[in-house]
Amino acid sequence: MTQQNSQGYIVRLAGLSAGYEGKPVVSDVNMAIRPGEFVGIVGPSGSGKTTLMKVILGSVAVYDGAAEVEGRAVSLRHRPSVGYVPQLETIDWNFPVSVEEVVMMGRSMQSGIWPWPRKEDKAEMTRLLERLGIAQFRRQHIRNLSGGQQQRVFLARALIRNPRLLILDEPTSGVDIKTRDDILHLLVELNREGVTVILSTHELNAVAAHLPRVICINRGIVADGRPSEIFTTEVLRETYGGDMVVVKQDGMTLVADSPHFFDDAHSHAETAPVNG
Amino acid sequence: MIFLVNLREPFEFEFFRHALLGATMVGALTGLVGVFVVLRRMSYIGHGMSHSIFGGAVVGYVAGINFYVAAGVWGFLSALLINQTTRKRQIGADAAIGIITTASFALGVALISRASSVTRNFDAALFGNLLGVSTSDLWVIAGVLAFTLAVVFFFYKQILFLTFDSEVAPVYGVPAGWIDTIFSLVLAATIIASIRIMGVTLIAASLVIPPVIARLLTDRFAVMLVVSSALGAVIAFVGMFISYYFDVASGASIVLLAAAIFALTIGYVTIRNWIRFGRPIAGTRKLTSAESQALFD
Image 1 (tube, each protein chain N blue to C red):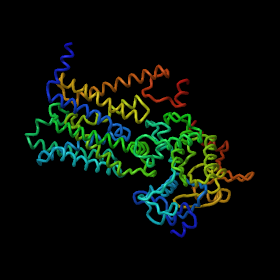
Image 2: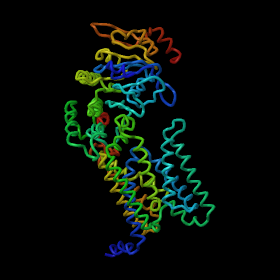
Image 3: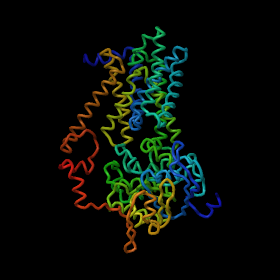
Image 4: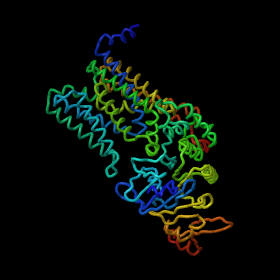
């Protein structure tokens, strides 16, 4: 194990089987990520994307195989120090907290025993909020922000730990195209500064446009590589269980649903009995 | 003047001075702990635990064990059992808690119906009584309040994180298991310390109503803690006078007063938002952009 990690992997899963209450959700997963990589995990709902991330976070029981982060085995008892942004659907938006209180949660185990934040923690929080463009909302209740701003608040909570590895669970879910683009550009920027980024998403085109590496999973790894290489109808059929159209144009890879064509006769045949 | 004289009258009795001091501390304590009970959506657990502890107290009485020792051990074990049960997915948490706590309560009732000497205190145990607060009870309440304040003060950041986001807090190193256990201990201790004044059936209301009123008035966690504790103390203080003058159970008078203040708060917030937004909306929050848009549709 140590030999493998001396080769420089920040995350390494080998023959991994993991899940909940004794039932594996993902099986026989082999995956290695080097420091500084930017990796997207895609797959249908229930395919094990979140489970795989939680394995790396040490939140899910490993039944078989090995999971290591920065060379150390991860388990429910030994959690790695990483930045994590959960799905925003899990957040209680009526909870009485402000933006700065949420961000300071990221330092709750490092900032001493007093209930109030230290000067250096506040300074770091201010720097991060300014960088993410949400400093003006610091005293606002989190519910009063837009989807993109809320995503940045939770990103700031993860970044205030100065993590080398950042994990985001569907960070582009439920936001408009412009916000999605902003978030992905921000992540690319962080990645260029040396932070390893792993994110899960349903946005195949966004992955193809922004990420150099993607892993397709469906309870196990289906394909792993550059989006332009692995986004094929065969791989996507195996991953999602349905037909998709892959278009390559001007150096871009675009994925679309397989269209359904209805002719007039078909439409009339379907609707006639109802109208009659 | 006559009114002032009447207000001073109950202070001539030691039992009332004890009850007033005890109730005020209990009000502050339940107001403080209740914030976490409400935000963690554990209101039903508070209700169930008070019933469970009642069973333990009766078992202790019959076995000749000190009330606080018997109720404490029983309460803590119940809290741990409830905590474990809520993590099981096969049975609904509410159903499991209902079984554990009502079984314990039923055990207490069964023992009481066998031992006729206990029956006269039955109403007091269920609904609270200002006659039964001794000096040692006051020390217990003060001790639990001091311990709870210390826990909230020194673990404020971790408790806030865990209450807000129980999934991510452990990922960031918050010792969720330890804090949950300490919280179970605090909750059990709060209920035990409050049981003589509030009564088994009414403790849950004193854990829930002050935090809910505070939540209607503020969007800040720290402010909610202070407002809820202060409200709990004031309501209990005034409630004891109502109990004395109208000769009703102390727990009932405190809860009825709290409920009246809750109704007034709802009315105040609704009218305030009506003036501010042009529509009657219960709650203090600012409107989301979708809601703001809806107002103009």
